Image (tube, rainbow, N blue to C red; front, side):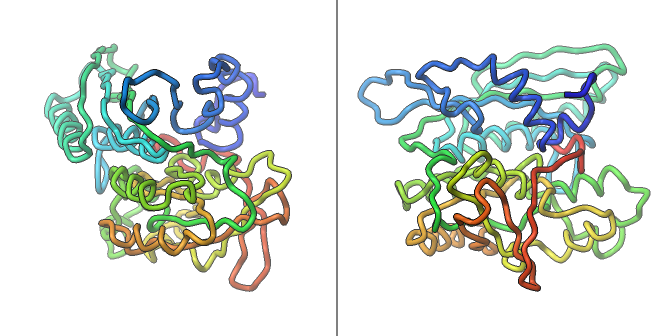
Amino acid sequence: MDDHVTLDHGSGGGKTARLINELILPLIDQGKDGSENALCDGAVLDIPRGDEEGKLVFTTDSFVVDPLFFPGGDIGKLSVCGTVNDLAVMGARPLYLSLSFIIEEGLPLEDLRRIAGSVGETASRAGIRIVTGDTKVVERGRGDGIYINTSGIGVTALDLKPENIVPGDCVIVSGTVGDHGSAVMLSRNPELGIMSDGIGAQLLSDCAPVHREALSLAEGLGKDLRVMRDPTRGGLATTLNEFVEGRKDAGIEIIEKDIPISETVNGICDILGLDPLYCACEGRIVLVTAKEAAGKALEILKKCPGGQNAAIIGHVTEDLPGALIVRTPLGTGRIAAKLSGSQLPRIC
């Protein structure tokens, strides 16, 4: 490990994984009530709940996006969506949210009102109750405007985790990928002039709650739904690597031409030298299902708002276990590893 923390450690890629595995994971309670979910988007807790079915799911997240406002959202909307989505991809119905603001001295009150309004509106839309929180103010120059920390609680009856996947399963994504990372990057670099022309003016972040899609999939597929994840930091490629990392019996192969990427995102990534497979999403689900359930999963997603671009993009394979293979339009294959550096810092 490096001698000092760098931005690469926050990229969601390889350095993030090493930081977590070496310094943070040893702190996680390895008891019976959630150790198997230590690296998932939330912990499934074995807490007695009377006569109600299901287990509690608990998750936490912090949001430090730059800029605070971007096309399609802001840090307030992002903080609620990010937490709701982490619960949703664990198969949980979101119930309760905590909300903490760390505000920098000098932040315009109008900006704070706008952010708080987004928090309230998004929470109402997602049907999650804000039940507790905290506020701190730090000296000018120490807070970058505002940071937001959230924790969420939901309930699930499913056991969704990467260990469930087997060769032959199908890989599906719920919509176009890379929209959020690309939109934030454009907002951060207005001097590039892309926002004002045709290509950039069309792009909005995909920031949105995905609980309805996730719950519909869970209800419709049951045990044929193996795992779900929202591909945020590190994007689609890093998430799929996490599904098979360390496996000796399964890898994943995706078909490049089948991955839904908008022409706008492709164009922006070409201009900025980015790879859309590593650009963050904030309103998408990547999931693995049994082969026989893939058609039904696609049908469910296409009925959801924004799901018209849902697609089967690959399958779980016994070839190259533990790796993600991208099959190119030429028929060749390349290995896509976890994000190794910091393609887009401060995108969530």
